[in-house]
Amino acid sequence: MFITIEGPDQAGKTTQVSLLKKYAAENNKDWLFTSNPGGTDLGKRLRELILDRDYKVSDKAELLVYLADRAQHVEEYHSLIKDPTKVVICDRFTDSTLAYQGYGRNLDLGIIRQLNAYVTKGIKPDLTLMLMIDADEATRRREGVPDRIEQENKLFFIRVANGYKTIAHEEPERVKIINVENHSREVLHERIVNLINSFIEQGQL
Image (cartoon, rainbow, N blue to C red; front, top):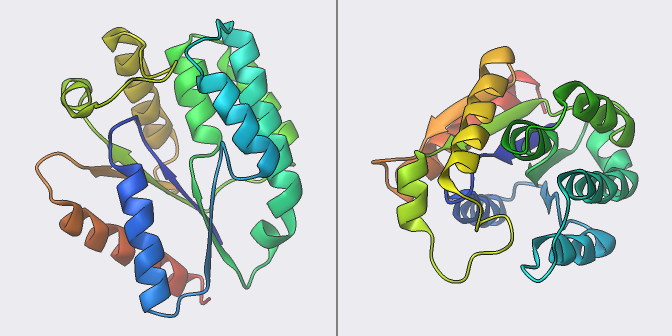
């Protein structure tokens, strides 16, 4: 099964993925964790470049760099993702491109969907857990020096969040929204674990 963790910046994805890895190790769950962007050696270098504040990157170039990363990621992980005995959990995937470059950058959604389908060989997540956070709360949580995308204005992140909500509305069977505000990371972790285990049990893995 192919499961993705999605959501706007500052929604706590990194924390929750770390907690999931710890849970899997402690409970002998043979789950494979990866990330996109950055889940391959090439992806790590592309991610560093595209987030570097010293580069001025056009919106279309940004889109194509992320798609190049995804093409390499799918090439390296394709057999595992398609293996019916495996559980692969990925931090971000195609929904991020729709939300950030499609809705956030106002690039053509139809073209992005076509390109996503092309570089992923048609692979889509079986389950997506979408962590959602209000744009104002996300701004309050932001610390340190922002990368090239994090330094975008508030309106950009509102468009991204609305894009994620639209995706969830269009595919309610696949996408499960988890609102993170006013919940501890432990409570959110428990809900995420329950959703994943329930989904896996239904698939009889």
